[in-house]
Image 1: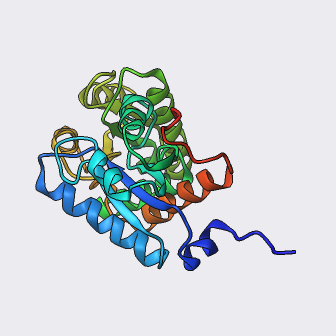
Image 2 (image 1 turned 180 degrees about the horizontal axis):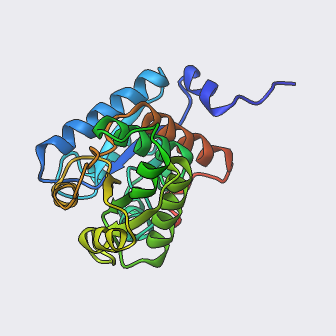
Length: 259
C-alpha cells in the first residue's frame, strides 16, 4: 500500500499544484520589487514548487494573464491580502472563473500568529523596545494601520490581528484604516492619547509599500514600522496557507469558491 504524500513533500516530485501569489498591485515601484522578493523567498523555502505572481490591478503580470499561462494546470491562489474582503470574495473568483486552470483559493494571510510575528519584528526594527519599565509600558500603545474595507469580515479579521498583537506586545492595540472604514489612523491616535498613552506607534499592516502605507506612517506621532514585505515569517505564512488549502482535499475547480 502506497502512503499518501504530504503537500510539502509532494512538491519535490514535481506534481504539486502551482502556487500563485496574488498581489493587489500599486503604482509605487517598491511594491512590485517587494512581492517579487517575497516570491523568491517562498521558492527558497520550497525548492521545486512552481511559484507564480499575479496582480489584481495596476501591475504586471495581471492575475488573468498568469492563469492563462498555466493552461489547464492545477493551482492554489494565495492572496497577499491580510483580511477577507471584496478582492478575495469577488475579484479573484471572477478572474479565475474565466481561466482554464483548475484552482483553489487560500484564505488571506491574516489573522495568523505568523503575521503577528512579522508585525512585531517590524516594530522592533522601527525602534520598539521589547524590554521596558512599567511606566513606559503604561504610556505605550499601537495603532494597527490597515487598508480598510466595507466588508464586515475584513474589519473582523483586522480586529482579531490587533488582539493578537496586543497580547504579544502587552500594550493596547487599536485597528485603524486608510479608507472605507473607521477609525482613521489620526482618530485612533487621538483616542489612545486621550487615554494617557503618549508613546503611540503605528504598525503597518500592509504587504508592500504604497500610497496607503505611506499616508498611515506619516500620521504616526512616534515611530511607524515598515510594511511586512519579504519577512521570513511571511514566506512561511504563504506556504502554510498553500498547504492548508491542499489539506482540505476538496477537488480543484475551474472556478474559485469565495473565501
